[in-house]
Image 1 (tube, rainbow, N blue to C red):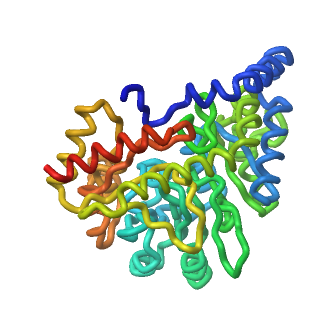
Image 2 (cartoon, helix red, strand yellow; image 1 turned 60 degrees about the vertical axis):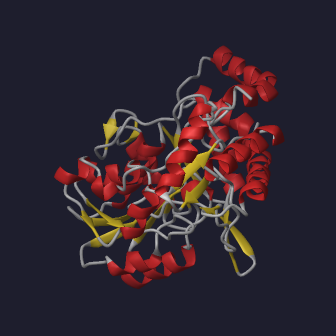
Length: 376
């Protein structure tokens, strides 16, 4: 079987191309490419979807994280707790602003930041925590918020990989990104809600924070040519907003398709010795940005990778190096606690193709290749 892709954006576009093309033509005709009405409409639509007061678009997910930290006005060289097992953007922005990322360990089963590791690494310089809702499901937000309240810390939720997922507490669902002080997301094309280029957004219920975020993202100005703070030029453009307005209508459908594909993978792979399929926590609904296995034996993982390559099946290793061991953080100021579980995960994880256009035949084919590899 050929033409299996890690993310199939072309086939997804084919299903909605008339709506996308119409939306783009409307923007082109209006010639309002920056801060046009499509941006405002998308911010309003996403705000309603999430059940939050303010959504502010920006240039990309990394900008969203940086703007969030800037809006909090943390003391110089504050310590910001981040997971060791995630993409570098979460920690990168901490260093860029002159603060100190503190890398803490993650849960070995759900891959998300460990509340116990957070607590163990709090000092009198700790100012914020950035939990990342990794691969499509929520961190243990009740425990994290309890710690934040106890130590008077800010919470910035990095929700680039789990838009549409919720945290379930006392029978109520709360959208991820709306639980902490500020939520951030990315609209990178491969995300569950992805544009056709870069884009991002911040969420908050705090009116004052929303105003500061908007000012920072617009060169530090509220009134044109009057700059109140040092800011950024970080905007979600109208063409991307038009695309996202179309795709937002399908986000729940897309997330359900990903979930269904994950269950089909599980059916094939669950009984294989030495493999752990993704753990779904009871306090969240998983939207499977990634379908990530743990293959406990390194040699077995290498055999699986070899067989996938031989059959031209794409895969991902998210992530091959924990952040505290990255070359960039050997010179930049940083701290880390015991991150042994993160180190172990880098030797075990394997992400399989996951997108809205996966077919049963594709999943079955991939599953059989993995079965065969494990028997060698």
